[in-house]
Image 1: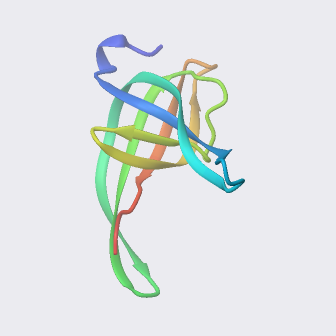
Image 2: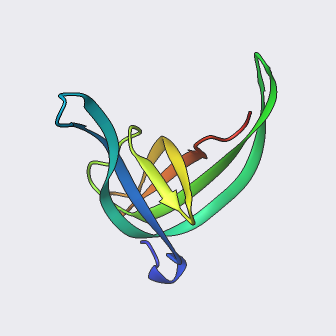
Length: 108
């Protein structure tokens, strides 16, 4: 069972949407799916070897109450930063979700 006392952070789950401007040009933007309370489980900087050298990515895990329809195409915003959802793990039987995320624009 998810304990409310641990859900101390507020996060916003967003989904990319495409609209068309008055000139018929498609424009991508982000729409809020839900604003929820979360437990910040882990926040670390992980270094990865890339073809262009070493860069650092901020990896974060958020735990939230179960929310149907969250996908890895969504993103999470928290404390002024945006995070790509890389993996979603269901906790219990629809009790909660663990969102494993990486900061957008991290690294070089």
